[in-house]
Length: 133
Image (cartoon, rainbow, N blue to C red; front, side, top):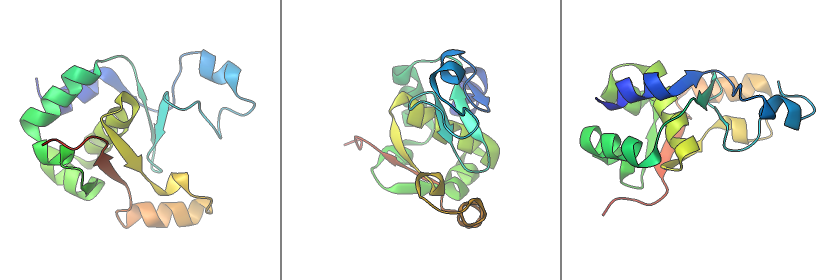
């Protein structure tokens, strides 16, 4: 199994549907609890299931440079994995699993139009939380 296969089995493209999320917030369309959904501006990613250790092992085997502590944009990870959409799902799942920080314009108090412009310019990236030695 590789990273792309793992992501397709253990993540969904969309917000978390666990039931607790929608009950826990006043307006679930605008906000999801931390740890359930990753906002990649173009779309959201939620974890179905999966294991942080297994995910990190697959990343280490396939794309070890993603864990070097440097920023890696979805343009780069998309080229690595062969599909920008799957790469962004991997970025979101890795963020939920604690493998790396997800850096997106969604984190900033900007208009939706500006967030989308920034995302389109490549300003969605990951940075390993504990760089591999």
